[in-house]
Each structure stands twice: as C-alpha cells, then as structure tokens.
Image 1 (spheres, helix red, strand yellow):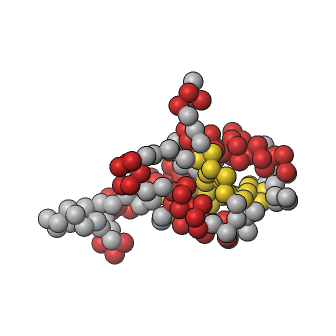
Image 2: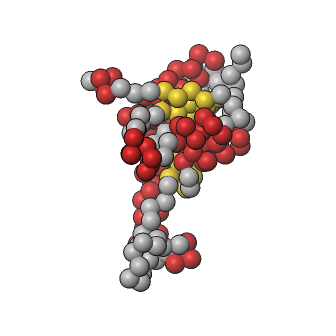
Image 3: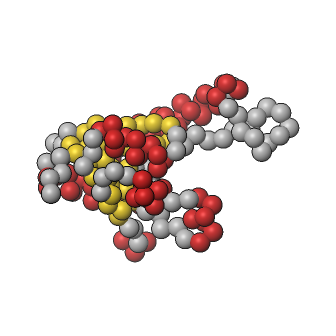
Length: 159
C-alpha cells in the first residue's frame, strides 16, 4: 500500500485533534502530503420577519450575518494554523477551509486533493443525538472513494 496524500478532517474538538495526531503520524511515516480540511457549517440566522423557523438565505444576509461569517472564517483559519504548527513538522500541507455540509465537504476536498486516504475522528454519538445530528464519519465512510480511517476517542484518553 502506497500512501502519498492524506486528507485529515478537523474541527474545534478534542475528537478531531486526536484524529489529526493519528493522521499526521501516518503522514510522517509515509512522508505523505497532507490536506487539512475544516468545513464550517453556516449558522442559521433568523430571517427578519416573524417566522423564526426559516433561516436567512444568502440573498437576505445583513451586516450581522456577514460578521458571523467573518468570525467563523477566522476561527477556521486559526484552527488550521494551530494544527499545522502542532503536528505538521516538515510535511507538505495544503489546507481547505470551506463552508457547507461537513461530510460532503470532506469528500469533495479528498477528490480535489486526489487523496489516498481520509482520516477523521468520531464524536461517538449514539441514540437520539446521532439521529438528530447525523454522523459525519458514517456519511464519509459510506460515500468516499478512498479508504477512511475513523479514529475513536474515549474520554479517558484526554486525562
């Protein structure tokens, strides 16, 4: 097996950081290029009428919405920079910071990067929480064209 390019999906969680460490360890062993991905799922702001169920759309965005997008983008860029500083070493790293659906974004970035492997963490949600929130890891595993390493995280590992 030859691994030349690895996509690592991150967010601002201990689960993703744990997976990033695994992904970067593999990349260092194979001297593989890394595609570091942070997908920002846009926050839904209430529309300016009395119907708070509908969120604002791009064409109805106001200054507050644009400020939120700017903040989300800055947080994403800082997360990527911190992860590269912590784990990157001398690896060749490309980063992707995009808005949209997390699972689809990771898959799209892996295709664009021509990755040989995807590494992601799992929040280990179960039951109703998983039903409501969905499972990014499960979606990526089911729809990816390349192998996916899903790195579990146990709370005892953080201590």
